[in-house]
Image (cartoon, rainbow, N blue to C red; front, side, top):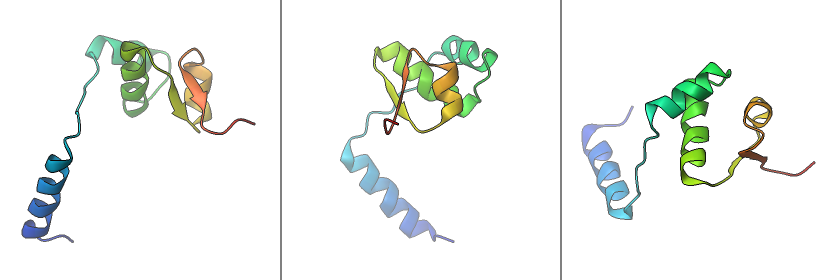
Length: 76
């Protein structure tokens, strides 16, 4: 278990890296969930779709459902 000072130091370090935090539109997520993706997976697929980029994954379920957006992490 991490103590509060360690967690605060970690959070501060992550803030210093300047990550851009993005959330997809809920309607985009809902559309992917209705096709069979989990809420977790639909987040990444919806963000890729909204940004017009491919999603690299080794999850065959995502590759099957989001074939137009998802690309295999390693080519067969």
